[in-house]
Structure formats: structure tokens, C-alpha cells
Image 1 (cartoon, one colour):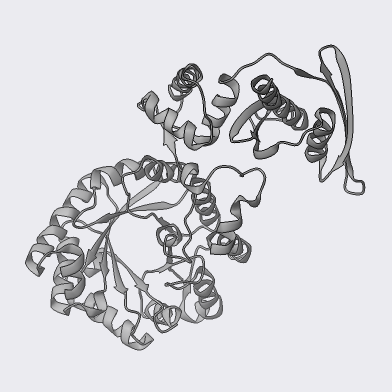
Image 2 (cartoon, rainbow, N blue to C red):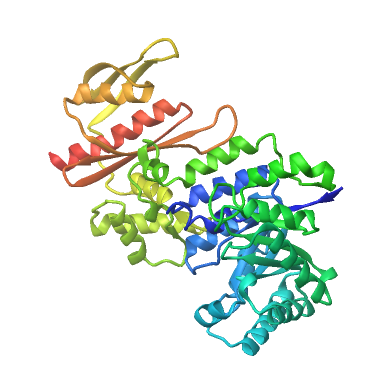
Length: 472
């Protein structure tokens, strides 16, 4: 039984799939899901030079068990940067993309045929010096001059490439035509047996899956797929093909098909434009734009860059508070590879605008369950006086916040609310961060407790005390 490789390009294609722009967290979640499906390789997009971009790849590399393929353009891509991002993968691969049709050579690579062949040799040689697993992807191969295409592939194999991908970028070939094309190229490349051969078929005529299936039946080693419907065959389509015809053709895949449908639906939701626009609907993610969610600061950033991000988060701090935040940031950054916006939020909450406590939490009683409405009974202390509030809400934390509003007799807009575990185990400490908006200013507070409801209440009161102090 021959195993057909499934190479997933979802993260690489995400920018064009339905206009989706993935946040840092979404990239990690998709990569983790693909790894659970046991795809043979996860292709990453070419690096753009941003810290968040590189960090996302490094983080994905650390958490997946399969092959991670970094993309390098033959003309402009940096092998050094790409290798630095993927080198710690269990199975790193560098994929050199080459435009081989006359049109793409002129407009993408800006090279004539002889110069492009030499560029391929140099780039593959450079990749092979650092990575044992090197792939060459011939873009728009079906519209290339076949002699030239075979020369490019042969040159790459001579320099040590061990994977070849032929692309029908236009997606206009019939299944039989494309299979014959691939077989013809393989037969004319002297060192073809040294490499695994993959196909990447675009869905110009809604026949991408059929074309890929035909090449697999004729001996191709792998197929480039996407988790959701788009330009390439989907994981589900290829899994269905192998399920129905695998025994007849003597082929199988390593995909975990029992989880395929559920995971694909999750990824589809994340990449759906409408879902992406609604992704901020969760009150645990409010207040931070997609752009800011990808901000990553490190120990090398100066105070000006840190203060800029703090202002983008909505805080208008004094010079003294900015200095305090920066000092706290440096302490955190010295122990971590990066500091994201949520951590910076927590630093602001715990460092800036520290004020005397006007309100103190005396006690709280929360009742909730799946058959009763959540209620909160809170007692706060203000200037020695005990103030009590009782409220119902949509969940225990909502009820608690409404009880506080009842006590103070004022409603403040909840701009952001985040909760997370800071330790592990049954007695884990929970951290909560609350941002309240009063007028045009934001005030943040944080709370830590083994009880996440208690941590949330303390975070709200911390932010409330800053508002009261400023407005008195």
C-alpha cells in the first residue's frame, strides 16, 4: 500500500481565502488542528520581515509534530531568515518557489530563462547548505516551455532538492491532460527518481480534486491541499477519494479521518469573512484590534515603541506612569522571547495609575447553575461603610459586575475583559484584567485569585478605584 502525502497550504493561502486576516492566536489554533489531523506537512507563507510573523512560525514549529515547510521566493526570499524560523521543527523543510511560465518569469522574477536557472541553482544550493529537506515548486508549470521546465527541475535536483511540485496555476487542464503532463515531465528529468513529486492544482474549472486524483492514480507522491474550499483541492475531497478508491489503487493517507469533518468546520469558521468580522464578539477578546493582537515587543524595544503601543491600546498615561510601565516591561521582556498586547495590558493594569483604594471587597456570594439564573450578593467597603448590592445576570461574572454597578450607582462601559490561568493544577491561580471606559479615557485593573470570579471582581474594583481617584 502506497502512502500519498497530504501537504496543507491553509496558512499560506489564508490571506486570499475569503479576505481573512488571521490573528496570531488563530494561526496557532489552525496549525494545532492540522497537526491533530496528521497532515504530512504544513506550509507556511513567506516571511514578511515582521516580528509577529516570524514569532508565529517559531511558535507553530515548537508545537507541531510533523513537517513545517518555510517558503522562500527564488528571487527575493531570505534563506537565512526562513531557516532561523523553522530550524527547530522536528522535520523542517524549505520550499523554493519559482515562476516558470514566460509571463510569470517576466513580471514576478524579472529574469530571463538562463538567469532564472542559475538563480534556482544558487538558491537551492544555499537552502541545501542549511537544510536537508528542500523542495522546488514550479509555479504556472503547465504554461511553461517544457524543455525549460525540465531544465529548471533538473538543476534543482542536481543541487540537492528532494521534492518537486508542479503547479497548474491556471487550473484549465482536464484530469487526463494534467496527469499526462506530469508523467511527461518526470520521464524527461534524468534524476526524477531522487525526489518525491507533488502536484498543486488550482480550481479554475472546479476540477482540481479530479486532476489531483488522476495524478495520484498514475503515481504522484503527494497533493497540495487546503482545509476549506478555495483554489486547491480540500482535505475532505482527497480523503473521500482515498476512502472510496484507495483499496483499488493501493493507496492510503495518514489523515485522521474520524476528526476531519469537525476540525475542517472549525477552520472554515475561522477563515470565513463574516466570522472573522464577528470574532471580537466574545467579551474575552474585546478591545484589541486584529492589528494590535499581532504586536510583539521584545527586550530590544525602546520606551518610545512601548509607549506607542500603550497609546494604541487606548491608555493616556503620564510620563511618570509611562516610565513605570517601561521598567516593568523590561523586567518581563528579559525573561520572555516576546511581550504581546495582553501582557502589556496586564503590566499597565498592575503598574500604572496605582491609587488608594476607595472601594474594598468585603465579601461576595455567587449562585449559578444550569437550572437557575446567576445571582451575585456583594458587599463593598467605602470609608468604613458597608455597601451591599444584589443582582442577577447572564452568568456569575456578569451578575457580579451588575451588583457593583448597583452599589456605586453608575454604569461604566466594559471595554475589555480577559481571564487566564497563571499556574497549573486543580488549585491554579487565575488572572483577570478589566478595562473600563470613562469618557474618553481607559482605566484598567487586574486581580489574581484561585477563584476566577473573585479575580474578576477584584480586577473590576481595581479599575473602578482609578476612575474614582481621577474624577474626585
